[in-house]
Image 1 (cartoon, rainbow, N blue to C red):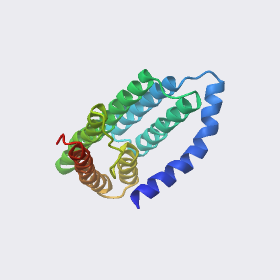
Image 2: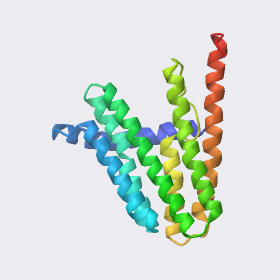
Image 3: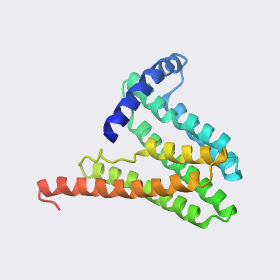
Length: 206
């Protein structure tokens, strides 16, 4: 059910993004430029606002610029497919943006004396990196790893909603969101490792 929801949501977003992607390509903007701009926007929202306690503004800016991850991919597809450097740049910028978001959240919670929330944010930071690493390593070994309930978009949405609600005065919303995210991220790592193990068994390489 979760995967069906993800596919449906992404299909809906694609219909919105495609006209914007066409317009940017006609204006001579490259997918790589959108990738870098999106990352810079996330850094401003996370480090410039979120880390200083401006949670509502920070969450909104991070969400808007995080959506460029879908925009640059659509532009690359429309222009004939992603280049090797484009794929490398996109993946690298994603890791930078994710680290900024969860690092900023951990820093702000630490300044508030929220030790449990800080711990949850650090777990999310580590587990999020593992989610991406397991997939990249599997694909580097010639296997597939397109499984998991907590991919990058879902992780950013969960922490974004938690930050927004906390900024609007809902108690413990961010902490609850972080612990939920920590749990589903760890579960996703397990899903992906099990998926790769089953593939390795089929070819006798376990």
